[in-house]
Picture 1 (cartoon, rainbow, N blue to C red):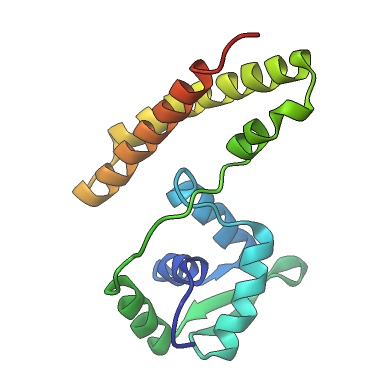
Picture 2 (tube, one colour; picture 1 turned 90 degrees about the vertical axis):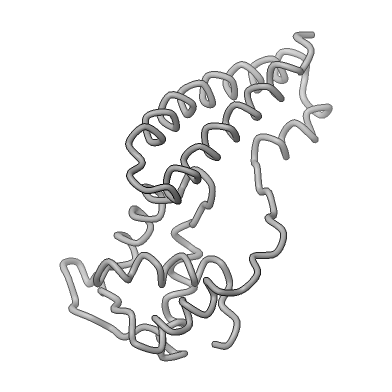
Amino acid sequence: MSDLNATSAALLGLLHDGPMTGGELVAAAGERFGRFFSVTRSQVYRELPALADAGLLRLGKQGPRSSQQYVITAAGKRAFKSWLNTTPGIDSLRSPLILRLVHAGWLTPKQRATLVASARDIYTGQLTEARAAAKQADDPYTRAAADFAVAHVRAVIKLIDAIPAH
């Protein structure tokens, strides 16, 4: 696997902390960087076999209910380090909310109002969580990412607030 995609790199980065199952990786991804980079269960379970086939992971202990741990290999560590040292390129934004807003013309006015109100409630709660995470950040890189998460949520709330009420 010469060129890692961002999801594969995210998994290799998490596995530097030690062996994990697919479910543990999904949880760890959500906890560590879910505010700015989402990793779905289906993505994780699609990437793990490919990474193992490429020699970047090996199978670890089998856990309860047939869960399988994965362990990063030396080749996986080198591939991850190589990925870290490449130019990141342009970010792509995947926002289910913005996608819904783009298509909101298909909704009734009442449905649009409900969409906007529920989104505002959700993002207001996320802002509280993002601010708490930023306060707990212990190194400048984690802090910068946490501050970005706060700014991103604020920007989404500003977008929501710019939508006319009617």
